[in-house]
Amino acid sequence: MRADRLLSLLLLLQNRGRTTAPELAAELEVSVRTVYRDIDALGASGVPVLADRGPAGGYRLADGYRTRLTGLTDAQAGSLFLAGVPGPARDLGLGADLAAAQLKLQAALPAQLAGRARQIQERFHLDATAWFRDADPMPHLARIAQAVWEQRVLHVHYRRWRGEVRRELHPLGLVLKGGIWYLVAGAGAGDAGRDGDGAGGEVGGDAVRTYRVARFLAVDTAEDGFERPASFELASYWQESTDRLDAALRRRTAQLRLSPRGRQLLPMQFGAAGTRALADAGPPDADGWVRISLAVESEAIAVGDLLRLGTEAEVLGPPALRRALAETVAALAGRYA
Image (cartoon, rainbow, N blue to C red):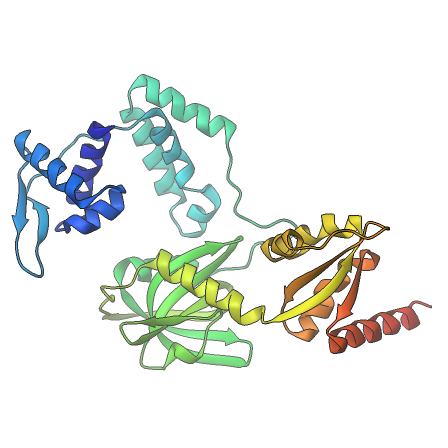
């Protein structure tokens, strides 16, 4: 185990440059004291680890030093062939590059690891597109991806819910969520902080927003570059943004009665919110129905969502939601009488 940790420590220093002991400890999930001992062990084995003191200090490898040791295990080698999903890679204009990289990696692996990698490809397939929906048309995705790589300013024509706008964006990253591509971008001269889809956020005082790639009507890449915020981390931003969006949308609570069949449907229709509601459900009555409290969105959206449960659910409250649902059902009954 220590040999694996020393290799991970060496690769972290090689890939990240100067890094502090607490940062290394957090990454390796060990104590700072353990990091100190491992640094000493690397030095004793001939690895030139340098310690820089002061507020901006940390550990780093001597300039020009790189290790060619990868230490891939069977599982790690196989997982590399699951890292690039063919469909999204093709969307980004990287399909040929991904295939070539996998071929080169497979050729470079020892026979045992190459065989393991082939088994992974034969037995696992990742399909990022959601069920029963066509992929969004995304004629501008490859250009946006190039701008993300090159840190180039984008001038865009974007269709939002309240109409079309033209904006200057600083593209920070792309995210594939449920088969839908999103661009995370900072505000340029056009004050993009008021647009986008999702809860957004701020990095270093600058507005950062999320944009659905399929809603870009036109995209032009400027000659100008931009300074990427040093504190921005795409994964952290995305998690915080989705948490804020979920909290902002599900501010209301509906009181329901659910049949046994309704209890089966709820997680399928409402996901994690449905699962949480069932966990706090009261005991079933004589007919097997239970009462739950379910977090829902606005009244108009909640009506449509709850209708998907059909006759397997009854809305008990709040009264306004119950009335809205009753009026909708009455209108449907009249239409199909």
